[in-house]
Amino acid sequence: MAISDSVLKKPLRLVIIGPSGGGKGTQAKLIAKEFGLKHFSTGDLLRKEVAKKTPLGIKIANLVAEGKWVPDEVVFQVLVPHLKKAKKQGFILDGSPRTLQQAKMLEELLQKENCSLDKVILLKVSPEEIIRRWKAKVAQGERFQPGRDDDRLDILKNRLQAYQETIGPIVDFYQRRGKLMVVDGERSIEEIFNDLKNRLLELANG
Ligand code: AMP
Image 1 (cartoon, protein in one colour):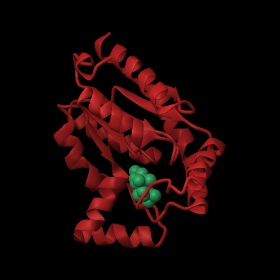
Image 2 (cartoon, rainbow, N blue to C red; image 1 turned 180 degrees about the horizontal axis):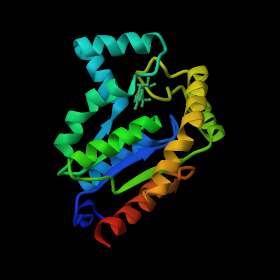
Image 3 (spheres, protein in one colour; image 1 turned 60 degrees about the vertical axis):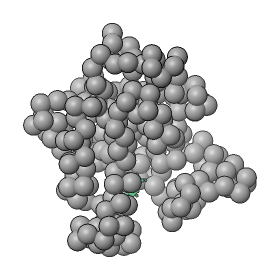
Image 4 (cartoon, rainbow, N blue to C red; image 1 turned 120 degrees about the vertical axis):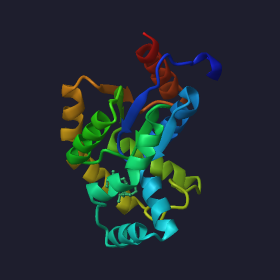
């Protein structure tokens, strides 16, 4: 289907969750382009804030340097203006919620803005598959996520572990609200994208 065919009757407001290195960012970018949505990654927004060296950016840089999780309030301070601006156009949020508290904060924020999420896409990829992909890329001389200092196998394993420990309650939260869309992420980029695109078209126009 051509891009111009994927016209939506209403803007979609989406979140994509899944493990680090599982292809969330790739699918989020494709979906954003296909449906004319804004794409936000909290990781990117935080890195931009650090690069700007604002007081908040310095605070974030210090936390990250100490290997600390960025607190929910700080993530939202960076995220809220972007979400408010994009609510009419529609968006796909990637990298958040990482905690149950963030899921609750996001729901409250959207309620205040008189809108809500349409779906939360769970891109399912096993840790074994992510490590296999990482090793395959390294064998080809490629970096997994170019330009990032945290692109190392030990760090990847830590992040996968952290994901496993925190994702359960977030998945339950969205499942209870009937918002969860589970997608098999262990397929080619094109197959995943086509599957997602068709399901989202049905959702928006059905
Ligand atoms: P990412 O690019 O999504 O892998 O994020 C890079 C880093 O930014 C993470 O390892 C976290 O330290 C921080 N970060 C990004 N998003 C969040 C979030 N929603 N909550 C807490 N920390 C975050």
